[in-house]
Image (tube, rainbow, N blue to C red; front, side, top):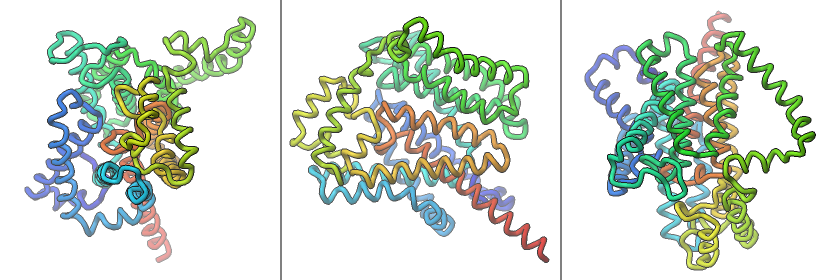
Length: 434
């Protein structure tokens, strides 16, 4: 595996049995964190807490062993820790202090794990691990669809395949993220991806697309062309010229003539799209959830109610019942990460989260501009998916969540690449001066 930190790239270190042992431990940690944060064990909850404890212990053990090398990483990525620090601070004014404390510590550990993985591994390795682990979960979901092998329902109550996951949207997003990672891998150069891995990736891509269709997750279906378009736009030089020109022509024609055709036909595009995918203009109750969130925010406009306190405090019992009526039955969430953060810890926390998103984007774009990295293009496409899906979903604000892990890992691994590039540029300039 390629790595993001040069400490592990020393040939002598790689030859020692001690290095090989810790390499296996780190690879296991990477796979286990992706598996758990993707909620692949949500149907067997009794395993989740013990395995998270294993991840906590392994992460702290590994950080303790490499602490002199890891501390500079923390200093270079201090902006990532502002959000969990504010959430911990919100315990002091939380309406449910014990609950907020536990939740904020889980969030902090989640972000620390993301930082370690981002430092330990390169973007290429993270994408490969993401594709493999999520594809296994999707494959098992398809197996459940075909055989009913697991002791829980195949479909959700409202239709659509759930597989290993708690709902169809969860399966759809996992399949979409796996497919995007696989498409990125397929566009990488030969020295980055071997022929066997590339061939297996094609079959995995087909399986993920099949599962996406079975899930009936319209959020994922609508996100697919967006994320794929971002990836192809960045990797246009890896696409055959004829395909790129044809796609560009179709896109330009749709942008130019699409609104005119719709206007002539008297079609409202928003209502037409929502109607076609079986949604109402309330976005399956999300609009009502957002209204409840805004009402609570107006009562606590500066610092919020305390991290995640709304979902536990007796003060908001009536409001929580209203959220259940609006559709928040399978997950306690407002289905919007900005509103969730505002209610939990106020504007300071939301700005801190936006700062992490900005840093991750800026770093990946900086590397892409320097070397047209396919891996960074894939990271940017996935980051678009992380943010957009979290605007109407249950991610990007809480602990033990895949979106948080990916966001932090992408920011750190891109930052470490930039750090090494600056060192190389500095050494080169010194050599030229001498």
